Length: 372
Image (tube, rainbow, N blue to C red):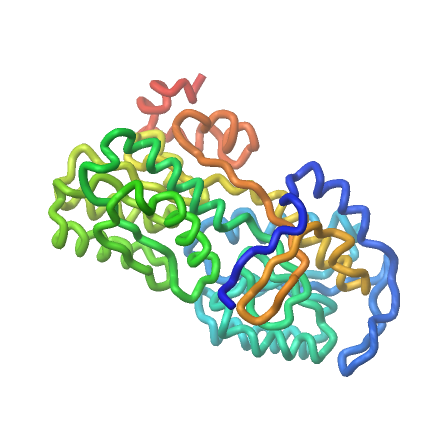
């Protein structure tokens, strides 16, 4: 079946998750089977393999990795030992990294898949070796033990609702271009499904693309193709699935002489995107507070490594293409626009005013009251 979400209760916010972090429990013997092993208890060294998919998107090295490592340290009183690997968008490399960590006998894997389908075999090998797997951000196929991410269909709906708000009564006056994420990323399919649920019947989608490896240069090419096919005067808005691609789309629009720029969506609240929002070039991004997801990943990793059930931390389940009822924590998201920069990325300390309001953006920041 296609990847989908089965809610058994409401998605967890940061406050509810904090209550659950105490549920990581004491050590016990893992169950029987070929991978049975003695689990580390409180005070024992807990070996965690952390595998992230790429380093082109700023979030992974700036937020995800340090936050997960910090929360693992907090939950284990500093006894967690993290082995880290970044696959740099290469699914074959990531499979080798998983196998290497299994060979080196980590107690648990936190895995953000480059390609959710390609990594399934490695996930099965982890299961056979008795190494539980927390699918982080992207829901890997295979017998994963738990998952934490954002409500990814809701991400697409948030983006699409914002685009409709920006279009207002112009929604029927032209064509919308959809620049979706990579076809190998299950999250991209969920973003797209959520966006279509809002946009279909309300706008005309003139051109739609899946973007290989989420690369901005590929999104740039897609936008050029759409402008050639539709005519630049017909494009009234662009659904871009993340901020890097939004940057490529906006550059293509500028090069083609499109003025004023149509509203363009994004996701991840990257610094460059926040600055484009300040300048009025990008209409919105999706702010995904990384703290709750990182805390959930750490709590799940500690619980599973110690032989505790994932359900001590989770309150919902999700389905992948291969596995039903995976225990999960889903984190809410926020539409980020010029109107709420101060109470989101600034208030949460994601960026400072100095980082956002560089000389190039100083005047725009002043108009928004961001430098006061």
